[in-house]
Length: 272
Image (cartoon, rainbow, N blue to C red; front, side, top):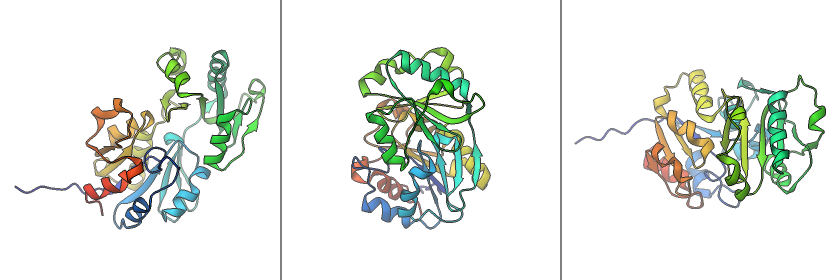
């Protein structure tokens, strides 16, 4: 019997919990395997802004022409070298204000990214330092109630302990869920974005731009905000350290982020 191996032309890969290990580092095996790709395009697909992945793209040799990143969970697609924006989706201030009011009512922390990439918060908290560190930016403290109502935003977030987010995740008001795409990008981040925004739609947008068949793509992830790209990609790969509710969407379970699971998946599917 002849086994046909699907030719994968593009790999969309999540960062935290997937490409990055618990130390927020990329293993040597992952780096070498990604750099060895000659035909397939490797694309970082993350909730972070471009500033938060520049060093990662540099390390992987992706800060060059014809390389792209899916940022802000698909709200922005950028060409890495020129910073040309291929696609961008925003949400209005009124939506941000509703999420902010809900966060304050429940004694939760609030962050938001303005459409120019500025990170804002009503008050710095322990989680702000995490966001500042991973994205290489400094948050600006503002009075959310006094923001210009014409200001557009890329996304906003409710940030708290895993226990607090577990408590509210299934009880988000329908008024918010009907207006925005709501997803959990990690144990401590709950994200709200334009309803036309998710990693799957971002992947479709990029493949259309590059004239690549979506069936010729692989998506690798571990969390709820990766589900959409796992669904649309031709090959869906989940990490061993995954959010178990995603299992029905997986074609393959690779090794954990501590064991170079991304490299293992690339080699398993013989991606060139």
